[in-house]
Image (cartoon, rainbow, N blue to C red; front, side, top):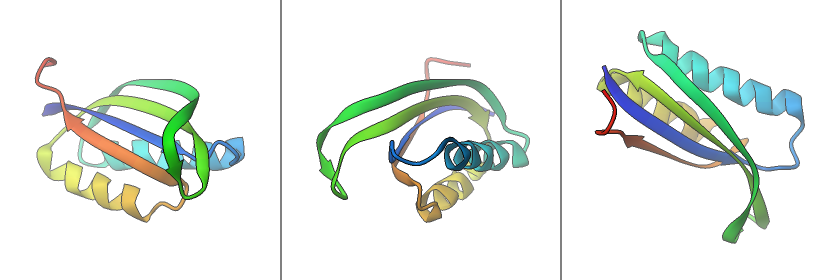
Length: 97
């Protein structure tokens, strides 16, 4: 398995239940193909550099995890169809084993 990190943000005005649903879906997608979530850092509300879909703030979360490269395509697909996730980025980490 290889190390990855996922950074995403959601609309800060969504409720805690919707945010928990987003996190649960992401964690389920990662762990389906024997992936492991190493850490979850909630960065909280941050100002965006420019407005995206009329939003000026975003609620950021960083997830470090290990997964097979084939599982990344499924995670990318799931993140693209989730309405609550505004933007995301998945990066392979070479500095972690």
